[in-house]
Image (cartoon, rainbow, N blue to C red; front, side, top):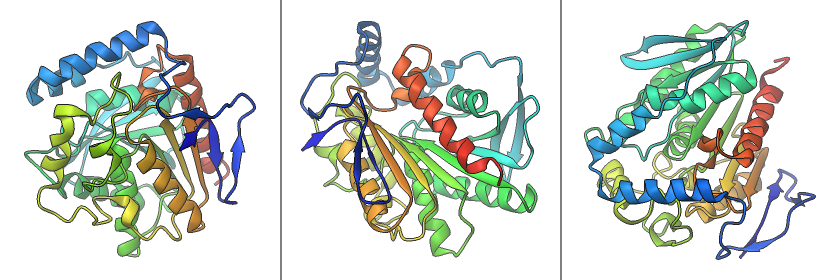
Amino acid sequence: MLIGNYLVTSKNTVKSESNASLIYKNEKPDKVSETLRALNIKKAKEGRTASLEQKRIEIEKQIVPTPSNIKIKGDNIEGTKVEWLIPNGSSEDKIVFYIHGGGWSRGGLGFSRNLGTILARETGYRVLTIQYRLSPENPYPAALTDVEKVYNYLGKNTGPNSKVVIVGDSAGGNLAFALLNKIKSSNGNYPTAVVGFSPATDLTKESQLYTSDLDSIHASYHGNDINIVDTYVGNNNRKNPLISPLYGDLKGLPPMLIHAGAREELIDDILAYAAKANANGVEVTCKVWRGMFHDFQLMDKASSISKQANAEIAQFIKQHLENR
């Protein structure tokens, strides 16, 4: 299959970017600096030998300084710890609900502050982050239950005119799209829009995350890390749409922006989800970034491509929250 920098739109067309060129999936990354590649190789090697507890500690240490014009406020919603990142002058009724990644098994409010701060800085809106319960101590459906409780709270307690955009990366993207299926099954109210970057959309054994060997430079689901899926899902049906969003009824879902790296292991699963949403009439834009890897948006300080991607995500959010 050939892929490149392109947009899949709800009009069932493919639009090439002006600087795009189609590439084979086995082409080596050509847009990643040597420094960034070395950093990813180091992290990958450390990740294969570190214990889960070590990984949890390390990921929470990766906190970037928060700008002085963004206030941090801890809170507790329905028994779940959350954190507000509030830019000066931000509206109280326009909210970005960010659901962090980390393989359902690591990450928390400290780690969430990284992308949460980027989203608050770039959009000017309040960002709510969540410390959902982690596996293996709390397997499915614990994390999704926490996410649903917080989302429902926002709908009931932030005013009748409030608008919410949900953002999720990796496992957080999985939870974001699973939440849409949960909302649909309960006839609830959808968010204004959803953003997923590098989302895990298919947790079945047939999924590419089990079979692919695309990019060993940065592949969060490769090798020893594969048990993060098993410990999250357990013996549950992997084609349950609340576990693998790809298998849900996607008709009527809200507008979506999906970003993926061309080199990441989840690329085929991500494209399959975007294509299915598109075929079901969802207003979906899916952009594949040439030469990039899983969750590359986290490298905002090291990569101009990551900065560009985050700016485009912010523009999408503002488009759907402004004048609403």
